Length: 341
Image (cartoon, rainbow, N blue to C red; front, side):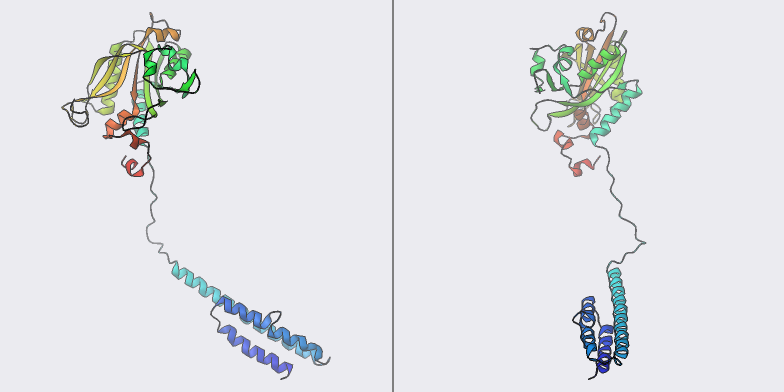
């Protein structure tokens, strides 16, 4: 078979094979078979040296023509295969753009944040300002300035977490009140929300970290009657218009006189139920008239000025408000629980 016949035969075999190929891998195999370094066309071209000078131009032109035809067929077949693959992929990933999208679930505030902001709104509406202070506190601001000197039994009941003998994690936000009185003097009307820490074992009603909101008013003529009035307003705004409060005598080192404050059960209206344990009242906070020793420690003359203070545990209010019986639920970040609020 002459070289011309070999080239024509190669073309006649290659083109139908390429056109009938159904897979990219098979197409690549045909390219290597016919046009690769060891392919059939390359093998034919190596025989060009055996031709006479008159035959070479004609055979070279024919060889180039065959190469172009094969390359063109390969390119065309490749485009067809790629288009078919794209069609198959699109069919497999069919998307109906008229269908509604999947809505992303939005988060919401934690119940502690909801109630804290509600309390802040109530008191700021009554003219109070929000004050803040350090959570790592000194012994002086956490105890001594609040009429709780070294050796006082109140220190033993608070299970304080100390860093050093004089540096600790605050057990109450009252230190913010002292710092504010030192800064502003006798014209004070603040609430102090924040985290506090005590060395308590974790159970249904205790946590080593919890939240307090304390309030302080200092000025001329401030009395226990003013304290009762402001707490009655707070209770009605927080728990409903028909809510009542009662004071029970108590002792706090930093107030004199002092009282535990109860609110009428907002679930049963004071008749007695599971939430109030049948008593009709729920203990909600402690309060009293600021002790003269505390005022003197802040360079305020107790013969001229007086004040009242109160403090509540945020977790207790949240648990009462939502009927939660285990404080641990507030800190475990269980979405099944939190999604209820």
